[in-house]
Image (cartoon, rainbow, N blue to C red; front, side, top):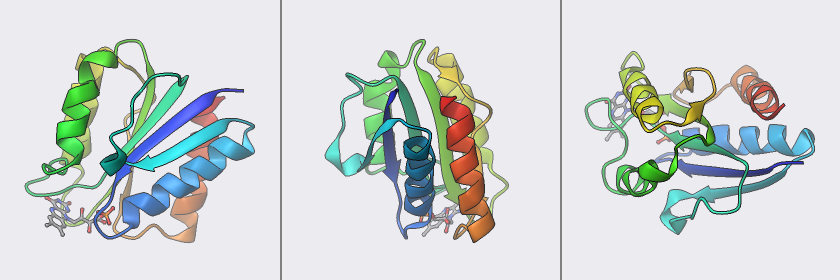
Length: 139
Ligand SMILES: Cc1cc2nc3c(=O)[nH]c(=O)nc-3n(C[C@H](O)[C@H](O)[C@H](O)COP(=O)(O)O)c2cc1C
């Protein structure tokens, strides 16, 4: 059993719905999951794996008010940590996730795949994909 931390930011609930489905996937795979909004300023201490979620905001960027300051504060601690990224986007083409993937790799994280993205509100199929993604990530 792994201890998994999921930290997300979500303006209208789309990335939050992904976070909840990812949490379900990890839990169904027999792991202990803590899923929190970034507003709780969680510490990375004491977990085996991490899923970070933030939607595309502003000019295809991470949320500047809450998520990016928190991510910047923990970035130096990501080296060799098992990490996956996720989030919802709207009219863009996913550039925010490509930038975030590069940044996370440069921080030295052991990044799983290239980030899981969903356009706007996740469909039932998207939520099933989230659950499967979590199970594969934590396997
Ligand atoms: C203020 C604002 C800025 C946004 N900027 C972008 C953007 O730059 N690129 C993009 O693809 N979508 C953008 N979107 C769309 C959101 O990423 C999209 O609606 C997403 O599903 C929101 O997810 P959330 O509810 O988890 O925050 C923006 C939405 C808002 C409200």
